[in-house]
Image 1 (cartoon, rainbow, N blue to C red):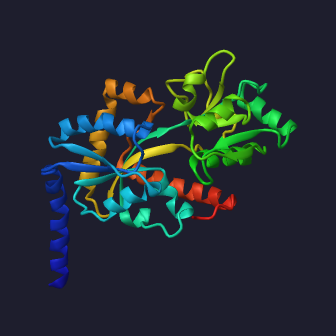
Image 2 (cartoon, helix red, strand yellow):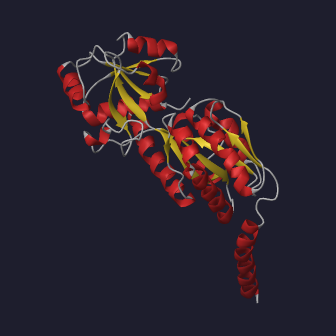
Image 3 (cartoon, rainbow, N blue to C red):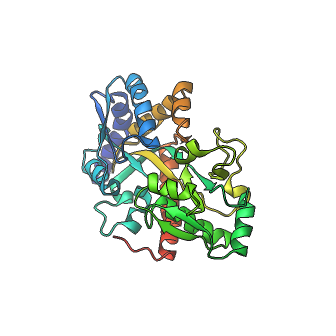
Length: 321
């Protein structure tokens, strides 16, 4: 008799999921963003929110709670009811937090439900005009012939630019010197343009104003495929097939236990919004590479990213702070 009760309860739980999805949403949806205002990820979120509002029939309200490497926003969502009305717009730090943050206040696998890998922002390999190279192969050859003489800029140990640079060193077998800056602002860009640092693994928007004859040269894109904005610039994988593409990315997540039909609905509406040619053009202008994955695809990406990046971070001797 007890076994029969368990079967009935399980059956009712399964039947309730489609019903829950059909009645969702019945009130406004709050998206808490862990990324800063005005960056490519923020631009993407604010471009698709009105389209999602229209499709879902309820307001999709964006609230930015940047800070603490995204932990403020992440914890707020992790502690919210798993009903689909409070969602996280998280960054790639959710995959690496346990390696970079001492005693992180959340566990990605335990506390969050992946919904959709929305977009990534591939970096470009920019080189200062004075450097006599015009391709990734030439950069590698030059670095090997001049060990210790070339440098690259980054914005903090363990952050994206640093990991990209050190992964490039490992894969290419070179030794570019890492030069840290407080932020990717005027000082970093100014030193790069003046040739005080030679290589900048930068977001396209950071160097776009400085492109042109006799100016900054772009020799590669760190992405699995060439991007629309730079169709003639080869990917790094075309020279280094084994390089693992590291990029800043943004995605929707919910609290642990979020019903699968709700996750799938949000992922579907995200895909539809980014399929709109006007929205796609708007965000791609900021160097954004659109993905809009399904929930299971995003879960696999997070697991893979955590594994690969964890090994890289540990190999560099970076200690959580």
